[in-house]
Length: 160
Image 1 (cartoon, one colour):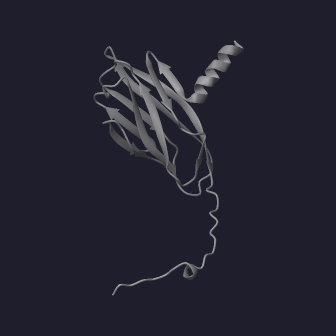
Image 2 (tube, rainbow, N blue to C red):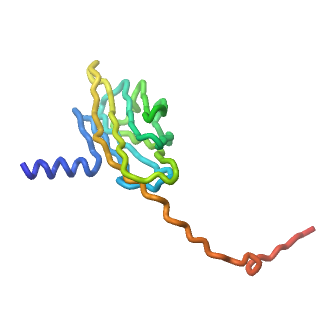
Image 3 (cartoon, rainbow, N blue to C red):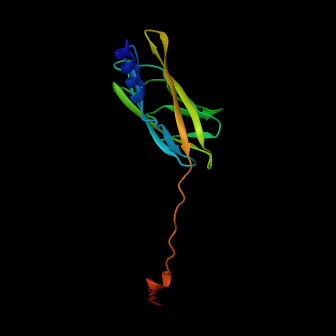
């Protein structure tokens, strides 16, 4: 029983989720810098499945999602939900979707992001729930500016 628990914990750690022959993996980090956008990639292994599918992400208030490489999907973001919808999935057995996620500046704390990948297999809708992932927002470190006398290194030349 302990071995099974460790194995399940490992699968959750790498962010891989399976249903039938469909697999979804994400590189969503456990920690992000507040106020900055982060590029996230989601790999979807769908085998020979074709047809309709949807990736839906639920993000907390104060977060935003912007599309990057969405593999021909339509994209909407409203009410804390990002939706990537394919009327026809990409033809490759595995494809990668990318998006930017960010938060309002000066926001800190721990927040949950969850999702579901829905698809049709043999005329039956299937939902592959992506377990919630806790994201810790940390403040941006103070940027240290060094004083530099620009006149010491600047030579202005004019060919007038």
